[in-house]
Image (cartoon, rainbow, N blue to C red; front, side, top):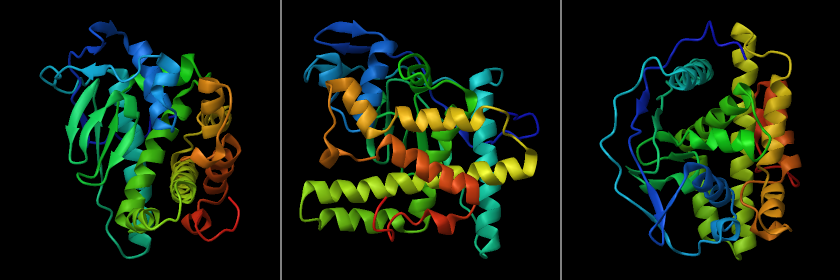
Length: 284
């Protein structure tokens, strides 16, 4: 992935500090916590993976440290975020609107947010209350080592997906989905609304990649395959089968591997947000 010509966003906050997670009085390493991170984020009970039941507790984080300008991972995140700002800024401008950019917060362990206490076990997430994307970078390590989804473009895809949720918040889609979920006749129906929301965010991530590549040719050979591998690795069916040996479709909240790959590619190949309407199609 070529990012040399991309500017660094000034909207990154590095609020990482010394943190220690414990369960039943025993310390847990970040590698172990990252398993729970991925599991909970994608709808799997983390106790199935870690066998730690309900004993997970987190200490109050140490004082956040200032952003480290020479940290290559911070620079990477800032460049990707800057690229999303440029892409969505132009898309909004084309429709006569201004794009309110989100902040991106790097944290470890846990962090207070406008949506409540954010925890590493939640994985990367977007909070509409403060319009911020939150990422614990240990998630990237887990993608590489446990789910065999390495690569910088796979990491960029995660950021672009969360920014996609910001777009949904700005356009009112998230609120409509929340209302629909509350009036759903069953949990399975409620989950389907969530799946369609997540798949649209995947499609928006593809739209970003299309526009960013058209501007500065950021994609290199193998980048698309990286994103597809990541999408496949974090499908609900793949994660549940790895965690518990079988999948429960009615419990899916993010979509299958095949669905996530399809909708990301839909955005990537068209670059058209109108092609990302996952709510009007009969089958996703």
